[in-house]
Image 1: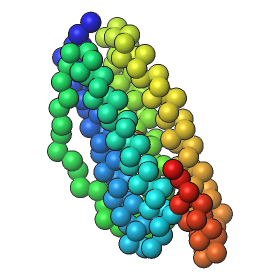
Image 2 (image 1 turned 60 degrees about the horizontal axis):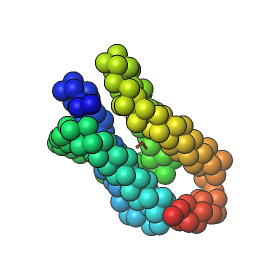
Image 3 (image 1 turned 180 degrees about the vertical axis):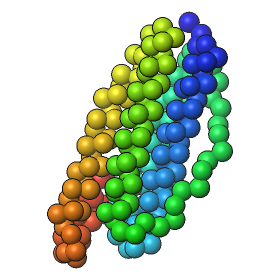
Length: 163
Ligand code: FEO
């Protein structure tokens, strides 16, 4: 069944949120590159790629339902963060915001009786649990590391291994 105009708009709003997430994490990756924390930069770059993949799921879904993908203007992300911890706290906060957006979109689909969109969103509801957990894990580790340069270097090395 073709997607309704209202649901098409709501899905597009969220597709753009995923693209904005990609943009934010790329900006964070650039911040880490500038700090010579290559492992952190790698983690953020891989995260940005994931966000692009998330956006593309919505993009394909819109066409599968005979809708259209419509792109918004992108908000300028920050250039710098005060510390690696501040950047990851911002990332964690952002993931909680995205979870809220997914939940709202699911509510909209439920009210509209759009079972296909509800079913598609199931993957994202599960994914957000992981997204929040992985950002929080790094926030917690950065707090443990505190001001230890050795600890920061070890964490940088570990994050550099993210495929
Ligand atoms: Fe696409 Fe990090 O949520």
